[in-house]
Length: 316
View 1: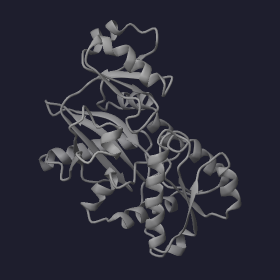
View 2 (view 1 turned 120 degrees about the vertical axis):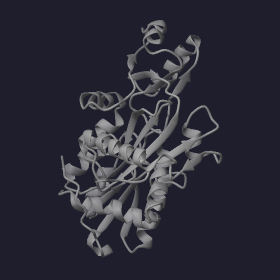
View 3 (view 1 turned 180 degrees about the vertical axis):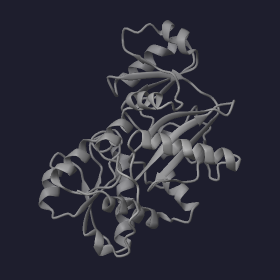
View 4 (view 1 turned 30 degrees about the horizontal axis):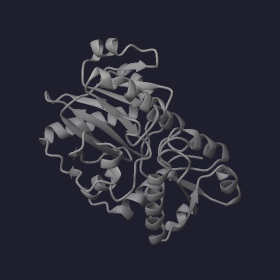
């Protein structure tokens, strides 16, 4: 695993010509376009020679001919957050922001992430991998109700359902299966929903999320005006510090590097349960990493600069 060691950049010319990859072809395309435009604007405002590229089928040809020195990845979901573009950039010899191939692939795959965490002794909800032949009664007997049903390889809560009654199981599985062939089922854990951002080896202050919706779904993440974000999160300092250590452990267990975000729950008994890692988190006006960064004095421009610095720390 690459070791985290910040190498501050003081002059925008040190970055050279920067490609900002945005858009792409995943289910999170629209969010990526918003994130990418915000990142591009912040870089250009600081004198960085940055250029936005909507990552289509010809993206490698565009990068290869463009004379770029490095890449700021703002592609969410498949193709951008799963190790595919990271591997291609390494083949091209282009340094890039954030986690490498392994971290990206593991972070995108909730099943493999959970298996790694379990192997490392980290807390994550018990689960079942289900398919069309699965008997809902056996899953409910194992895990109880309510249940969370989710595609293993999607982000932004796409395809996620809460199952409160056995009759709801089939429709929830079908919804998730339309997004991915692998479908996970977990107990629905009540309590507080939290997220912890990581930047260059440090855990930022935690954010506690509240929504009047059934859960923090796509609408609550990107469109709703009634989602509440608490930072400071309201936990006692010692408990927050302990959870920040867990965030770093979870991130590093998946070979995370540079920046990212770890989502987790804290149940009524104050036990934490890891859910997933985002290796290319959102950077929109509703996004969580910029919120956490502001609490430690990093405005959006400073945050984007720090993220771009992570491309300098990794050799091509």
